Image 1 (tube, rainbow, N blue to C red):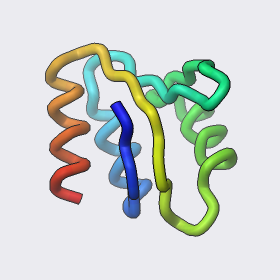
Image 2: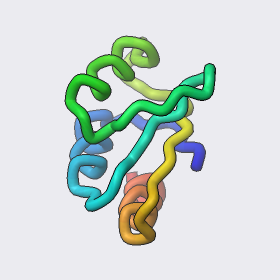
Image 3: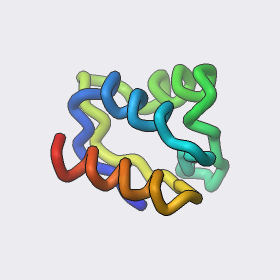
Length: 77
């Protein structure tokens, strides 16, 4: 799923941390980083964070309840 215009990055990673299953960031090269890993969170921030907003991410969540959490975050943020 594509996630766009994340303004509250701290809240986004909190939602990711609350997910039960694996949540991955798909890089432009097709690599997948585990977003539940703090190291991966810092690496992803370093690569895409510029002005306080993440304009677009492609993420993969495997559990239906995690997908719902992420969609809820996107709709209500």
